[in-house]
Length: 406
Image (cartoon, rainbow, N blue to C red; front, side, top):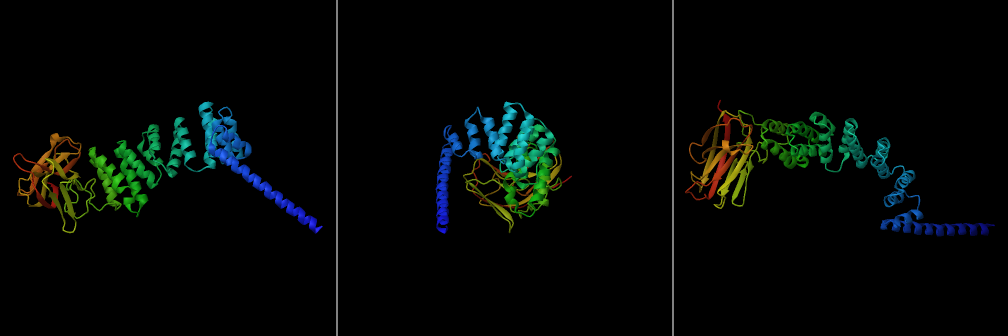
């Protein structure tokens, strides 16, 4: 009896091993056929392994006549197949004009898959239906987890509504989304909507390194776009937020004291209300925060006209300002063609105002900020004077100040 039982057990084990090996061959063959991804190979894979949802769903793409039944079968096999649910929803909406069924499928997909694609699908669906309540809900859900650029969502938001405050509330307190929205607003010239978004970004980032969160590229560029448009008020709001959040150490200028970092003690931010040195192959600019000073070296090969330093300044139109500085030349004499210029930020050269040569004594300039201009740029520029050669040497600049006189 024991011998018969042992023989029967060995027989079962051998049969099981053979069946397992055969089944493995079937699975391998089905996998190979599926990988070929052709109109004949995919249904062949389904015939070998009819219970695999992935195979059935892919067969639906090759079999247009049976697409809907196959997608439904894929979902029956795998209720978590959100891709097939979305495909069923799109077919219901587009092919059958059955928006109710489409919504049901899309919501089921979002219920079984909490990732990006079902949320973005619902966002698009409600945008097409112009259902603003559900649209904004799912736009928010999408932005919370989206691994992609947010501009498509933001574009739909602004097409749905132009209420900046409402739209701002849809953007989640997620640094990635806030940075992207700031950049989107800048590119869309919705400048007045930027300050509260930057304020939220600074708050959410907290003590993290601001350089990792767009301070020196996206936020800085957005600030420059705002100021270049002539919106000094919005620019000051952004600048104050960066200062209050300790993202920058430069002071916040005002109409009485419109210049920032005039003593050169803070490393140049190169954007907004701080100095931006304009270097070229023939112009080298070095800042020394310990001394403090700025050295401008000219090789003599510089262009006939070039900017050397620039800064947006918060001057009030029509008021008298007194500018003072200290400058020494090494190899460069008075009459060098280097002078201060006050330009409208919008680039209109008709109201430009120019000081005397910066090496001339006294090193003082009284200037009335041109009326009718909303924002100004103060620049230090070289312009070769007629009858003069291009200077070669170095200028050391210290202690620049601008103060309103009346």
